[in-house]
Image 1 (cartoon, rainbow, N blue to C red):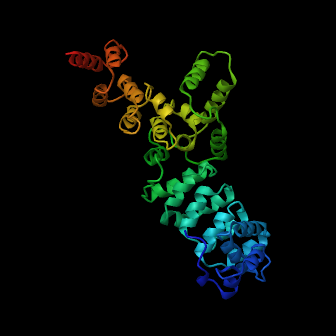
Image 2 (cartoon, rainbow, N blue to C red):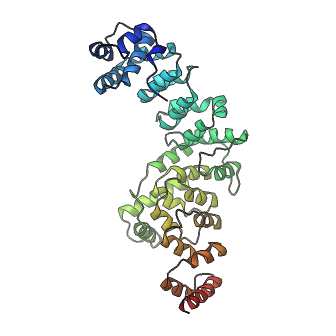
Image 3 (spheres, rainbow, N blue to C red):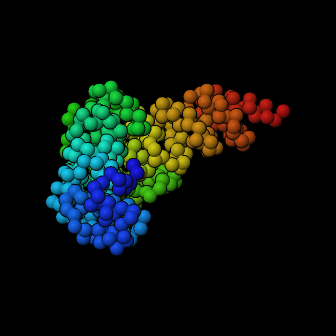
Length: 376
């Protein structure tokens, strides 16, 4: 939205102290909260000045807004019936939960403001209020999408909001793995968890806080897992992985899917190995996936064919030579795709495929034919 509102839409008293013709000294006084105004007019004035072109005035006005007592702010919000002003206040006061609660109950608030709050706010009570207005969620499904993607929203709340959409045949296109979530909540492929519990919320919260690597390093991931599998002396990083695995093991399928969607490379490195194909599909569809992760995952032969097919059909990922080579060598990759990628491989890699006993025989035969063709 365009902020601030035009001075033509406010009262003459407000325009006098913050309009384009107002003297700078008067604006400075008003920004300090010293204008002879009260209630909604005072807060509206500070809102307008918070977006003033003069940064010293804007900064002072925001400081004054943030410094107003809660009861003054909340009473003023009740008096304001302009949705644009409420939107601007939400963006300035988003760390004041009590004021945000008042904003949400103001009938003038725009849905765009609620969508923004659903994705930005960290206070659980405010987010619960947003999620509790089912009529608004159904009318504006983007609110559900933002709630789902906000890590501060409880797992049980996210499930409840998404289930509301599912029961009303609403497709949440802003969630990358919505089809997998639908299957998980309906119980496809795994026992459905009937009633979300505080333990589920706690497991999700704890899992999202566990970080092993700042960025995925392929060798570090493999080395850490080898250490676990061989029961070697546990380094600090390996212990973190085990803690992460234990936390993830307590989660339902829908919670794992959400973690795969919102988490970091640390969580995805564990979840990609999950036995449930819905979880693996959520990992490979995660918006946060890096090139290093895709390079690593394209080698995994334990992945379900659907996940490998998804990777193979992503043109951005298969631009990378190593990804194409890994997919050709991966028995889970559909044969027609492997054959197509084979033609893009270098001669030394084609030659190596001829002798590779771990790939489908059809690929080895095709590699031999391709090498013979290239040497003619």
